[in-house]
Image (cartoon, rainbow, N blue to C red):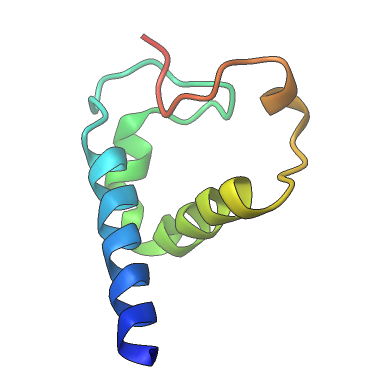
Length: 77
């Protein structure tokens, strides 16, 4: 069971990281004022926080005012 859970978390981590790195580095900043270049450059520092925010969004209530009024996207095109 523990191996399955670790495998699931690892695959989710890879999926979130792949989504972040699929963003264009020159994309316009979104509602957080951070563009793709920021996420690519500082992934080693912010990766855990980004991953935890994604999990929190899908498995509970993420209370962020701008999420209530805007489409959810990693970048605005």
